[in-house]
Image (cartoon, rainbow, N blue to C red; front, top):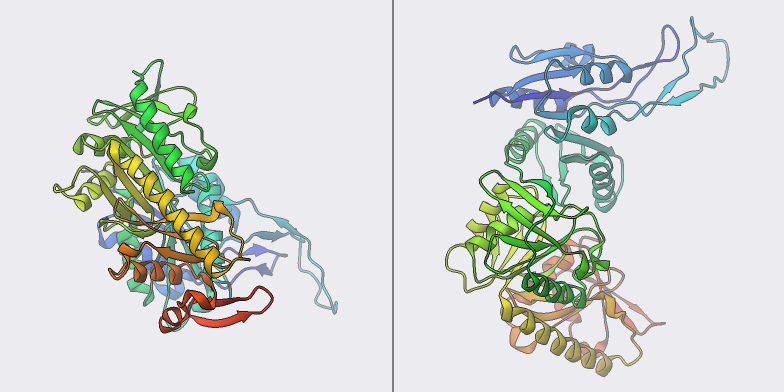
Length: 497
């Protein structure tokens, strides 16, 4: 078995102002240094690229190869000229965004004020994917200071997508003190996994997480001239897509729809398109060779990255004819996965199979931890879910009109609360003021507490009126109350807002 190779960058760059002065930052390189130590402890051949003062202050590990940089240009040259392509790259160095236009000699210190001209440094992280290809597992780092958790995660997710990274490790400078180094790992799927604790322990958990995500087996897509098309699959695809649109499950490019008729072919949604605007005519026929992990598809657009995973589940559970995968769902599923594998790998399929188990009843529902929800439906489930949705929307609308005639709600913000493969309630999914309603037969079974936990985690505010008689329920669980006299509604803010 080939030994994995990793490169870790650590510490801060130093950009010359003149012959004796530099512009630098406060990075010590301690966390990157700890990551390198953890990698070699697991048998990974590791190179650490860092400033000389990082080694002077923190010492050397005899099993790590060290390379020294000073400026951002030095770092880029070393990082891009590795003798062999690394399997894993931790780009943890604090690279200066700007460098001074260098002055030859030494600037006089006689002036009371001094103006420097700064030029923007190129973003090294943006060029790594093109340099080392899709095979490299690349981790970026995002450090901000005194921002909200939402701002930190949003900035990290943007870095993931803009630079085609496998992960970003995000943290807030205000939380780094006394040896504690809490981080939030942000995945391309939108997951935000928090690790707290002492620096060395966090580095250990991060390395374990990365090696597990990196050591996977991907499905690869290949365009074919023709893939057998099936009108039946397209019909099932359209019915499932229509259901998703009706319930407002899709809001952006995330998620997918797939259908199968118990054969070797599937019909799936394309990747990187707005699923909220997706039409059934965009369905892509595909065939999956699981032995070679190849997804063969017809047309110009690549199919969903999850095509291989979904095809595997269709084969394991032949009664299931359609699947819906969506993010930010509400309610509870029948099963929950244990580890957030990337989309489109065989390990994700195995993880889902392990969660679902062999004793399913012709359909399934799974919460993919730090990722989203997956519904596996048979031909009768789509019609039943349609009926359940229509009945609950009618009931919820009547309830709202009964208790607050003047309250207006946007239909596009109504979304289902699931209990397994059933619609058990409705949520008005508006972060500025949400409300939820459960079917009478779904109450008193813990589903309301589950939705409440999701509201707290997502930091939602609840809007309600006196006649709803729910204010005490929220206050009992830590929500703080205020009254909006102009609109005549009570606002109950999440305890972690």
